[in-house]
Image (tube, rainbow, N blue to C red; front, side, top):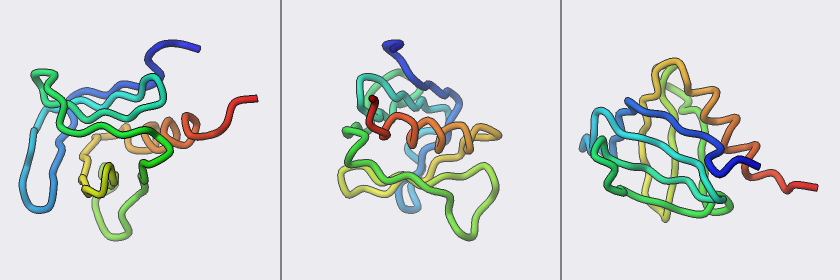
Length: 96
């Protein structure tokens, strides 16, 4: 298994109505999901077992919602939304 399972850059990360970063990063590594600023500073991080990620019902096609530690984040991923959601699901599945 690779050390880093998924990484995305250039992600806009919003919390409520506040933009936290316009060019952030998402990393799935070592069983954790991390949201980072463009400078690499951690915004939030949680074990994948405690993370909820899904498509919003009424939003643009490039958006995903993630809940980490009780905080809701809106992620604008460009065309990589489905890859992000699949990566979260794949990382959460138990390995045989």
